[in-house]
Length: 317
Image (cartoon, rainbow, N blue to C red; front, side, top):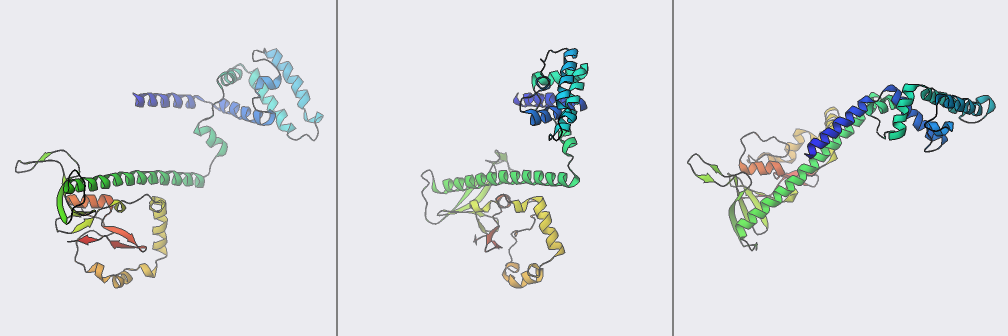
């Protein structure tokens, strides 16, 4: 119901905005300029010193009187007198025209809208292509950062819940740490499903090991991956698309010798020869991953920051 009301409000708003004409935009500009020059709250009628129900004859008489007061020849050297005199002529022409006065009376009774539509502001300010691109870059990067923050909070909740479930399965309701390692199975989501043998499995289970306060994910090869809240990747401006694009371009056109593959191979021979098949930082895990690897991918457990460089997370057998 709320969605329907919101969509209906947007439809009405779009209809109103699209109904504003060029003449309406002219009235908006005059109202803004008149209040800026003559004082806030000044309207067409009060400036001419006539009531809103004045007849065309009364408006003509008031216009002639006001034009004599504001004529540039009678006000030599007065700052802004030419603009005020020209504005008076435009105001009088709108009030003398039946259609123009009808449009002004509408805004006079209901108020001039604060938001006057993108077309109005675009026609007044006319941003260049560079300004538009900068705005879109900031907007999309901000939205991407917001999505990163939401995903980070979701991953934190998921990791904390998985750790609590593993400790509960290992320690029981008292939640008191026990000595030694305890292998448990944790349900990480999904409803009960039936296997090929006809057995009912209570959701998607994950093999884990609890050793005192530490909780590990146990993969099929027997390697244990430490799971904690630092495994989640926090939101960062440096990971938004534009910053990543700039950094990649800099590395492409100005390669650093310290980042060359030969130097990395010489400095980290152990990383290349450890014989482990686990995914490393920056690699893409193919489809068909195990249940444990899904949690690793969601929280980026396989790698953690250390001394400004990537290293593999602690593993135990």
